[in-house]
Every structure is written in C-alpha cells, then in structure tokens.
Length: 319
Image (cartoon, rainbow, N blue to C red):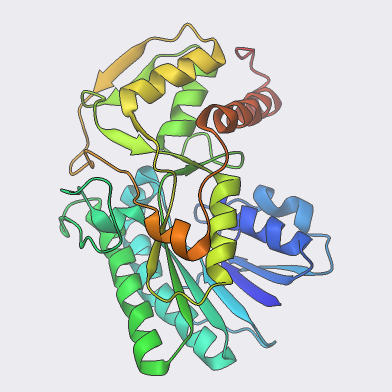
C-alpha cells in the first residue's frame, strides 16, 4: 500500500513508519518537526520505499501520487507541548484533520484518526468505555488539546457519514517506550530521567490520581488491527492495568535501583483524577489486547533512556 503518515517523525508516528516500512509498504512521512524529531526516522531515510516531507498539515496538503491510506497522527501530544503551542494544537486538530480528510477523499483512500483518551476529560466513569461522552472543560488551558481531538472525531465521523469515506478512530491511552523525548513532560520519561540522574521525582498533587500505560509495540499492533478492520466507530486502545502516579513513581525508582526521593508539586488545572480504558470492544472486535507487561516495557524504556543520556550528555547514570 501507499500510506501517508502525518506526524510521522513523532513518537508513535515513527514507530508506525518503521513497522509499515518493514512490511514493504510505500510510506510518506509528513511532519513539520514542531515536536517530532528527524532522529526518530533517520534509519528509514535511505530506504527506497520511504519518503519524508517537511510540511505543516494545517496548510493545504499536496501529494501527487495515489494513496491507499492516510494515518493522521500530527499533533502535539504532551501537556508541555500543547500548553506551549495552544494555537498550533487547535489548528492541527481542526484544519489539519480537515486537510487530511480532504486528501483521503480525493485519493479515495482509507483514513485513520489518532484520537486520545483526553476526549473523556476528567472522567466521572472508570474505566472509560467508548460510549462515555466525557467531562471536559473546553476553556481550560488543556482544553486546547481535548477539544481539538473531539473536533477531529466529529469531522471524521461527518466525512464518513456524508462523503461515505472509510474512516477509523483510535482513542489512544497513555503509551510509552523507546523514542519518547526525555523532557516532554509526561510521567514515564520524566520519572525515568530523574531516577537515572538520582534527582527527586516530581509527583503532582497527592499522587493518588491513576493512570494506565501501554507499551508502544502493543499500541502499534492495535493500530494495525484497527486499520485492517471495518470498524468506523471510535475504539479504545490502551492497557487497562491501573496505577496511582505515586505507585508508578516508586516502581521506576525500584527498577532503576535509584536512591531518588519523591517530591510533590501542585496539581495542574483539570488534571484527570483517573484514566483507564475499557478495551472490551478492542478485545471482541479486533481480537487485540496488550501483551507486554509493565515491568518488561519499563526495563526496555529505561535502557533506551540510559543509553541516550550517556550518548547525548556523557552523563554518569544509574546502572
């Protein structure tokens, strides 16, 4: 297939590029490198079936060749990023999604939207099933990301219903693994980086708020199964194993054998108290569920960051 992946130099997008390119598909990776990094795809640049285009999908997208699939993964995704780039986040979720859908329609290609568990906001239901409409403060600072993705889902379903476009929507829950940026503000790289450097781990609030974490290879497998399905409604893809943030911080200290302590900072505005996917539909409709255990995934990610710290900064880190 010929596949366009927007946001292809980002964390999840780059893993998808690698997986699909190794399967022999022609991959066009599009990214404006606002939060993505060309380093993530450097091993693919010499492949004859891989092409990189630096472009902001909020502007008109022009691809001359035919396409079989458009995977729309372009967007800032960490709190630090979408709070730093609020307008760009709203534009890529609205104009960018509109442009990507229009391209898919013109090329008669299938379309997959990378949505997020943030469409559920600060949920009053736990775990969150796809039928739950969410509890979102649309004018809060983090509302720029939540509402961009909610709009993205709405326009994707409108194109499906009105233009009969064959669409998919993946509601992605917290994902981690090699390729994440060390300073992107999310819990996994923040805790691992602090632990390896023997610095205090920063926990926001009481740390009793809960999260669930899915390893990247499991997520990619879920995306591929959704791509190859005929399901047009949103599907949760994530790991239902739930941890408190404090428990998770302690786990990383243990796995890194660090002597780091834990410090507490005020909870950011509208930070969700719980986050856990109901993956009943993914199990029954896609025959998918996570396979990689949390400790196995964390150990792989810790090793990645350990090597990265040594390489980039020549730092002595905890081994």
